[in-house]
Amino acid sequence: NGHTNMDVIKVSECIYAYTSGYPYLVSAICMRLDEDISQKTYFKDVTDIWSEKGISEAVKYMLIEQEPFFESMVRQLEEYPEMRKMLKAILFSGKRISYNPDIPAINLAAMFGYIINTEGSIQIANRIFEMRLYNLFLAEEELSNMRQRSFCFACSCASPASNLFLLPADWLQVIPCSFDSLRF
Image 1 (cartoon, rainbow, N blue to C red):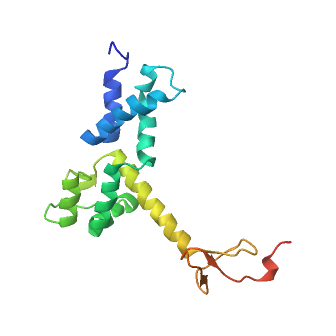
Image 2: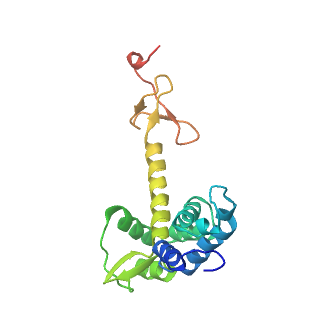
Image 3: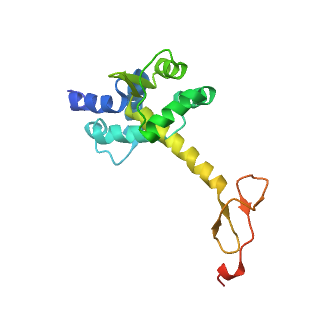
């Protein structure tokens, strides 16, 4: 390209590797590159921005920032728990699920564009959805585990969640511990 000197083929392939051509995601990456990444001082010039490194940086932003598109995805996961369960099983268990549009969870996920039919099996439609969903489910799992653990303020030991006194915050728990574990 004469204007940016970027390798259009390489940039296109890199964006496609993350998005599988999902229109909103392609546009979002390009917008990030043009509006946000171009402001970063560690990129030398436009060619450096429109590169694998710049695209990777744009994707990182998309994975950590709240965006209406992903907020909608989360709402849909909450509204359709069977679809959520299916997507989580694919990501965390590597579960193979046959594509069948008569199954409501599969039909919804396909309609929303979250999955595709690959040789008769469903898979997450693109790497960005895969990473965003994985991060969501992982964070939920971490918070769930945190709620199930307790913390002794006297000695900083982690204790099982049984025999606990729950504080109003519901997740912060204080339990008695033996004095022999205290360090003075």
